[in-house]
Each structure stands twice: as C-alpha cells, then as structure tokens.
Image 1 (cartoon, one colour):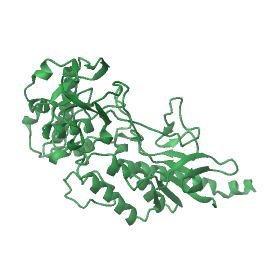
Image 2 (image 1 turned 60 degrees about the vertical axis):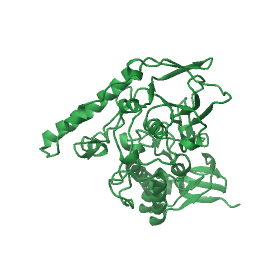
Image 3 (image 1 turned 180 degrees about the horizontal axis):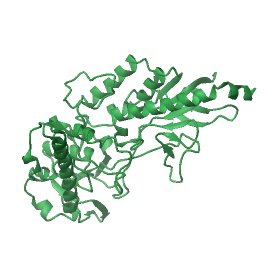
Image 4 (image 1 turned 180 degrees about the vertical axis):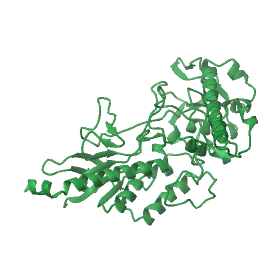
Length: 420
C-alpha cells in the first residue's frame, strides 16, 4: 500500500481530537484524525446508561456550537456524543472512524514521524496524542477473583438490572462512584460506599451553578493544583436535575458509608478509620467555596439572593458516628464490587522520547520533550479546566498556534536555502 503523508496526525476522535481538528482546519494545516472506534466512543460505550454531563449545557460545550437542549439542562451521554458527531460534520473535520494507531516512531529518513495503523502507514511532520486521561480502567489488586462475587470497573457498569441480586460495594466516592451508588440505592439495593478524601462543591449557590462560581472566582484558570491535590477526587453530579452531593443525605436514605478501602483477608474487607475526617474535609472544601462566593458578591455589589440554608448540614447517621471498619462480604450479602477507582494512561503506541521513567508525558502546556509531539486532554495541561469540553478547546488552540509558529520558522527562506 502507498504511504499516506500529512502535516499533522491527531490520534483520538473524542473531544480533544475534534477540538484539535477545528483549530488546525482554521489555520489551514493539513491533518487527519484517527479514532479506533466511533466518534466520542467512550461517551457511548464506556459510561453507564443514565449518565449526564456534570456541567449544564450552556457551559460544557465548545464555544462555536450550542447543544440542542435547555441551556441549564445536564445533557445525557448519547446527546453529548451526538453533539460531537454534529461538530465533526459542521467543521468538516477529516476524522476517520475504525482506524487504530498501533505505533508511532521517528522517521529515520525525513523529518517527522511514521505511524503504523490498522489501515496502513502514515507519515506526519507532527503528532498530537489526543487520547485523553481515561484510557485504562484501574482496579486495585485488593480482592482476588472469587466465586459468587462480580468485580467490575465503573466503565463496565450500565444499570442496576445488569448486576446479580444482592448488596453492592462501590469503592470510590467521586463523581462516578457517588452517582452509581445513588442510582443503586434508588433501585432498592443495599449499598456500601467507600468514601476517601474528596472535594465536594455545591451544585448551586445563590442562584448560580458551581461552574459559574468557579469561572468568576478564577478557579477554572488556576494553572496548577494545590500541593497534595494533584489527583483530588471531586464529588459533583448533574443527575436527577443536578443536586449537591451530600454523603449525610445518602446515609439518611439508608446507604452504608465506610472509609477508604485498605485490604481484603479471608473474605473480610478492611476499611480505614477515616470516614469522619474525609466527610469533614469535604465539608470544609464546600464551605470554602461558599465563603469565596459570598466575598465575591459583596466585593462586586451583586444582588444575588442570600442562601443561609446552604450552610446547614443534615444530621449524622450511625454509620458515620460508628464507622464499619471490617465487612464480611458474604455475611453482608455483597455479590458485586464496583471499582470507581480511576484510570491510567497508555501511550505504549507512542515510541518517542517524550516520557519520564514512570511513563508520564514530559510536556509543558501540551508541548512535549520530543519536538513535533504534543499531548492534549490531560488533567492540568494548562489549567484546572483542561479535561473539560470547553477547556480542551482552548488547549487545542494553543497547540495549533504552536504548530503554526513552528511551520513558519521551517519555511523561512534562509533555513530552506541551507538545506539545499
């Protein structure tokens, strides 16, 4: 097969790859986007049935196209994927579905890189890894495979009917874990939720959604996480119209809260004695947002309604006052463990000098240590909002501008003459 040539190869056809394509197209830079599945595949096949976006439609979108929904609605996962399909069509992005990139190496005979794909070889001067942070589901090696116990990652969960009868232990109380546990509780299941350290922002406060507050307070644009919070878990939800995640309310409705999952021995799961501290720290984070919001309202003379009730927490529950530290899964009737324990990245296909000894990309705002290679969609790539739909769009523009600048240098007459 003849070798295809292009200026930029973008690997990944989700929100990052699509944003990258829009900016490259506007800059007049030839490129191709390869997606091994369908457009925005992970929104369709790696999420549970009832998932909605964690931000309202007016906010969680690209700047140049609105959702076909109420601006204040939390859009369902299929509608989000459809939005990206429409975006590709509108901007005529050269995106190819069903093409997997198996390796990218430096071109030994010319500038740039050689990509081996399931559809043939492509040579490109620049490569953008736009596969995002949610690549490989992580299940800690805590509980060995056991008869009668189903263990799945949150990416494999679809709905309560999918699971065998019995109680469910959900490990991880971020956005995914808390929403899945809530859905299971609403379905009538006995649920145990393992709650680790987390941030817990208000869904709304004084008539504004928390995404608005993070915007006006400048928190979306923070360039680095606070020390020790590089990988903080955030409990926020747009489910059921959007409400603040409050673990006390979960407990009051019958959910069994436990601390951070530590180990498993002889059929018994052991939990850290940190549940009360984790809830208290989450409350402190919640209150800090309210404090900053109140100060902003006063400083700017805004007439937003006061909301003193937001500072009142519900009563505690026995499972919080006297936390369970050990749980015999069989005696408790637990037949399923759902691990909402995050993801790892996999860049095994990208065989270039752009990684540290632990396989982490060496990059600054997406510009890697390997000239000509870029990363897009990673947490804190340039700011707190880098993994959000709108945030990745701005990061993609920066990378497109960087590529444009590099191309300008490479076409300088003196440089071209020196090569002759």
